[in-house]
Image (cartoon, rainbow, N blue to C red; front, side):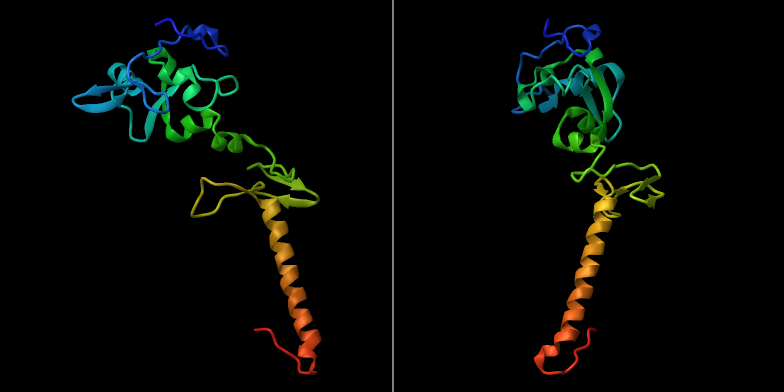
Length: 180
């Protein structure tokens, strides 16, 4: 049971690493009533009762800044009760160090615009609801509102220029075309 002590918080004490069967992802599993169950979930629920719908055990001994990604992280096999916390799947992913978590933690878009939900002014333009756009049908996603506005303005400008050229050239026959 004397596994590694988490480097980010030695006060947690050593992990208790599961030495039985594991999944391809490195999580311990056991068979309960003929059904495969995650060891971390089993331990947590035996101590605290069933996790609410949408919740899962999170290994607080895991630290994405120092742990290797994926199955190589030994903390996935930890079954020490005080190293487990019941959290939503979203919270678990955001704590994980996965690409989703990395992107969610970014404070700037790839063009250097600030990503914030707070009111802000950028280059003389006021964004009262912040600079993050969340599509109504996919509110878990976020996009840079500044980049979206720049792209929409450029597209509008291109359409206007295209319409002007159609009218100006008139097919070379002096007949004016109309844009509908």
